[in-house]
Image (tube, rainbow, N blue to C red; front, side, top):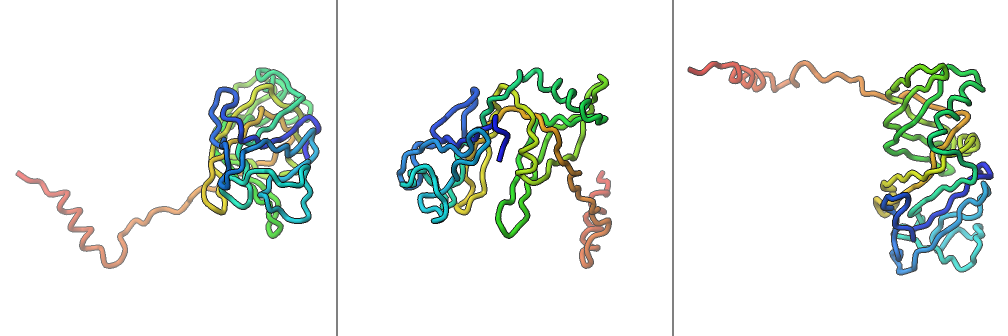
Length: 238
């Protein structure tokens, strides 16, 4: 599922990572079961699923007793989802790695995503497998030494498996994102941690904007009230 240098685990037992508190930490789930670490992907190979203690009968996990905690939702959402890498470069060198990749592909520029505000993924069988990430700060990085150019209204889109196989390398520092997951039982606090990643290719799209103009005239039946209000504001009192 991933390049062999990447692994993914859900570890709700961690309360802090890289000096940041993790919102998805918990000691016991909603049914009193102690939290435990679950290895999801090891060296790029899918090893396990995040499930409740009553998963589909076709799923086979490492342990047959279903010891995984369920938090407060039957779907078993992640607590602290942590991505680790064995192929890293110093964080300060990631920008140069991006420029090298741009030159290698003979592209006019590359995109540097500095911060995001969230996103969502569709993984049900009745819908297309797709994801969308909502960046906050994006720059064009030019290989000829020109200053970076701020870009507005860019979203990252694509299909999960195709995008994840294009990871070339990662940075050597973990970055933490705290947020909420919309589960069946409500909003559940979650955390995700991963190093900076260099993609050889990434699909983006222009963000949708609202183009409707507000009405210039009041709705029918309210003209007199609006005119009186306007006239009262324009009166000059001695």
